[in-house]
Structures are given as structure tokens and as C-alpha cells.
Length: 266
Image 1 (tube, helix red, strand yellow):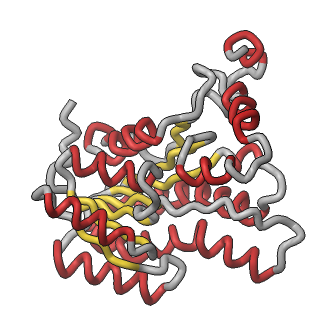
Image 2 (cartoon, helix red, strand yellow):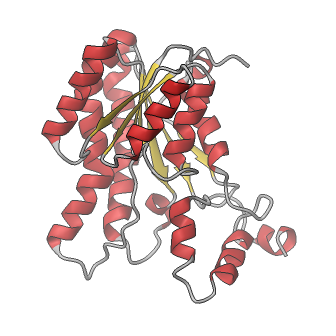
């Protein structure tokens, strides 16, 4: 199916993670579909990713940006607008489950909110004039933690709850401009960051096995490619009447009967 993303300018925050991360997978899928990936991230790894695209003849741009800084975010959008003159979609992909719990300081809690939800607000705020012109759309990357809780991560949970609230608010607020706003909700996905966390465990393989058994569908984590493919469909014209939705890409983790775990994943 042609997603009709060719030459669309798609801005992706948090897109310079390690190879195999959700953001890095998304920008590669965008390039595969002929879209123009624009990377916003503070990690200079983004320079290498953009250069790799360009060496293949694929237009791409990296703007090194602290996504928690309003001035830097505004400047990033200005740079994008100067080069391309438009923005067709924004994908808010920033997310760090930083373990900021109730024992954390107020400042640590606020820093978690700035990174995990305020950055979403900033990207949409500054990109909005261009989204209005293109009748573009917004896709937010959410987490099951907003709905299930996790324990020991008040900042991240609050932020991801806020992401879902903003998704619906923007769908209502921007419907008059023909702008769609949706969210993907992820449960367990085997990213480089997840792998790094498992390596801190005394028996990471046992922990991974336990996590896999908790996922009803096929007893495995969601692949980053599966997340990226869903993201691309939702931002495409093939999903032109979908707005205000929370789309779960989680192997049934959040909604399916726990009894399935005993029957399917033993």
C-alpha cells in the first residue's frame, strides 16, 4: 500500500537514539516511504544519521536541539521552515522512563515533566502555523504507564498521562483547521535502552523471560518496526479520518485477559 508520504516533511523529536531505538526506526521507515525525515534531538548522533541518508540521495535534516528549551525549540522550527517552507507532520517521540519517584526532589520531578511532556507542547506550539497551512497532523508516542502505573516513576507516569490528555485536547482544539492528533501507546518494546536496563539486572535473561510471558500475543515484546509501521500509517492520508485516538501497539498487554498468559505463553 502506498502511504502517500513521498516528499512529506515529517519532524521527529527524540530521533537520534541508538540504532534500533523507536525514533531511529521511525526515521528509517519514513525514508523508505520517500518522506523527508527531520530529526530534532540533543544527541549529535543525529548528524551521522542525516549524513547517511544524504549519502544515499535521501533528503534529511538534523537540528541539534535541547527539546526542553523553548528558545532552542523555536529556533529549530525556524531552521526547518527556512529550508523546506512547510511541515506536514510532527511525531513527538521523546520519552525517558527516568525513575523519578516520590522520593525525588521537586526539581527532579519538574525536569521529568519538561522532558517527557513539555517538549511535546513546545514542538506542536512552534510547528502549528505550518501544520495549519498543510492541514498536517500530530502523532504522540505514549506509554502504558499512563494507564497502568508502574511504581517508582511518578514523573514519567504523570508526563505520559499528560501526553494522552494533550492528544485529545489537540484533536478538539485543532479540528477546525483540519489537523489530526493521535497517540500510539506502547507497552514493552525491546529497544537498546531496554537492553541496557536488563544488563543491570543480576539475571537479565530471567527478567526478560518473565516480561515476555506477560504479553498475551505471541509471548514477546513489540518490535520497533511494528511501532514505526503503525506510526507511518496513522500520519498518512490512509488514516485521514482518524483523530483523537489512542492506538495500542502492545500485543494485548493492556487490555487482554490475564488468563491468556497461562494458556498461551507457558
